[in-house]
Length: 637
Image (cartoon, rainbow, N blue to C red; front, side):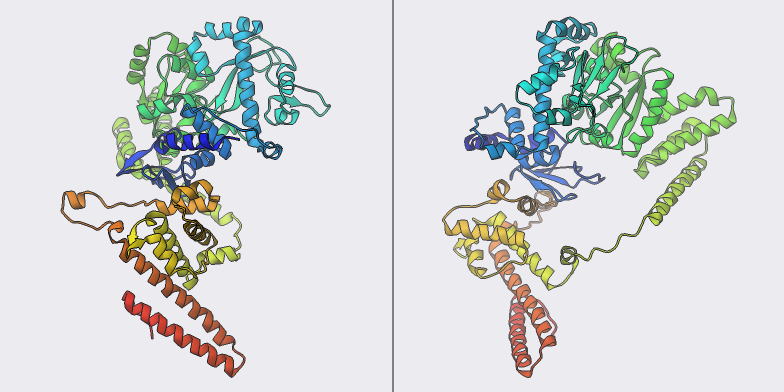
């Protein structure tokens, strides 16, 4: 268990902008920051960070909270694991107490996998540097590839002994369970009860997530055994989904953000060689076909990508397959083909860092020029092949989601190929219309989903007085979170609202929980603010608090500084705002009571009951009219 002292130290040291910038690229927006949502696929930024309050809010997914919450949500970590990550990031010494047995048993499966994968990484590193076999085979191989000790440490490379049970026996001796070893993919269990290490006699390439935690391994064999594949990789697990991961992204993310573009290569050694040569904004798809999830991962840090492939025929085909998917993901794509016979690993060893960067700058092409050059030789004397080449290019342009970019590429294609722009536009529109029809047919063929008539659905969608009451409940909580200590009528706003709404029963349970917490702690003489809820509240409470503490819109300073048009800040008129909120709350409450009373009138079974409910209705109507006059609201008589 991490001590309270350590937790407080972490919270005092962590900077939310610094923490979140390790995972996505933030852009300043006034005093705050914004970005595309890391939780949903979107075109317009709806993810906001408020440094002054130390909170984030993602309006597209509804997630929100502090830096710890973000790490938990983004990386799927437990609270304790998020604290460990932040402590490591800020160099804070972890002070822990002995956990109770039930707390140890409560470790989630994900936590167990992270722990055993980290153990395996340290085990493989130790074998590489300290074991005779590791040094003579594994370390010698890496040195022969030109990797220096600093690079080997940066990527935490290792070696697995050529033994069937080395890792398994070491792990079991240290208390790791066979079940966790199997779930992690480190040990293979057969139906005939046989079991053995997955990685044997191979150099090891650990795969990191964005937080730097080990989630998988790749391994290369160094001997020429016919029945053994050159590379083997960890299987899919609860913490590792290969379609969501890019090798080297953890080491490359800061350079990608700084350079504002990313090199995409093919394999582990390509990435490592590029980094050692000073090209640190390189990542790899690790031999798998590029996926939409991987493209979204790149887009968190940059919208510019250069696909770098071998110059042979296979490399060219791979480049063509990847380009359209990158374009569809909304990225700006360029292509760099290396000389025939070279790959990024071998090519980077032939030139200095400066020469390498110069070559890349001079030989990188946008995808239109690349495709035109690729088809030029075959199409120059064959009209049919030229027509096919044009369709290939237009097909690539059609997947670009931005219509302005599509238009620019059409103009460029028209100029380079000397084809009328109107002809190209006609072909582009055919493709777009065809795709739209396919989508419409797909929707038409999908089975209809029955309407959701659950109580929660009805409660969230109906536009009645009950919904209006909840809106006022929400506004009350917003005022308490933002201005609890502000002065209203010679007292603090928190005391004013708690007194005026002392007997109010909130219809929304989350708002009611927050209000009751304010009430309880205030009665005990304790101060309470948004940070109390971010630390102690439930997941729903944290979301609500982050939402109510974050605004997507702010008044531009130009209104006052440039145009001398002044708007009062809400804090300056908080007394009027609070008074109006209390009246509106009571107004909506009275309307809700009237609505309920009308139902009783309809269901009255005796004259006595009818007279009683009619009298109540008249009293409520008078109260509604009186509050409406004060608020300046016109109501039907």
